[in-house]
Image (spheres, rainbow, N blue to C red):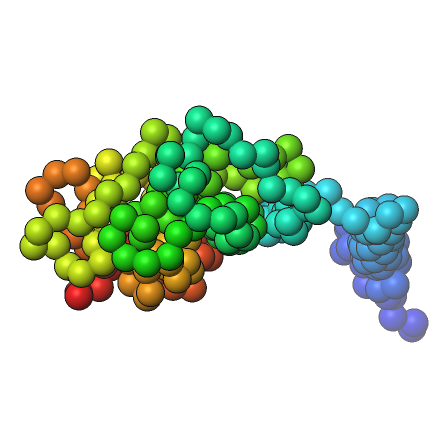
Length: 237
């Protein structure tokens, strides 16, 4: 007698039947979706880098300071016309005119500019007259050509200078305003101009004011010329 084959359980899917095909279909769908995402990302990247090739950003970028347009080159024939009311009588009449360099501010530093002045030589009154002539030149506004080149002055009149008092260091000069009360750039201009004029000072410049404060020896060094807005250094006598 031939044995009968036992019936298969209800609901069981035969091996390799529709259930197996469904699982394989799910794997292929996931692969297709991954490929679609990769292609979409590549398309976005290509769009960003296309054209000028520069991505915009909302984050500020420090590109450094703006380039200065100031040449700081003295223009030809830049010396302003003398102002009869600016210079003192002694400074105007005590010597023949000659070219002297004064320090003006340009591009956040100090730069020299030639001025035609009467600077007497010698000590005492002649030295004070030379110091006053330089002070008057510093207080005079630069010419239009000089301003276009970037030059400016922080020295403001009226400002006078006189000889030191008894007890002051040798060669001392006293301004009509306390040096510490002047704008740092103005004091830097005065100190460097006096230090560069052999008729006034050699090396450190002994300056005081109208008060009882002691005279200080101010120094014009490289740091002062590069950063005139900083306090002017002093040294002991």
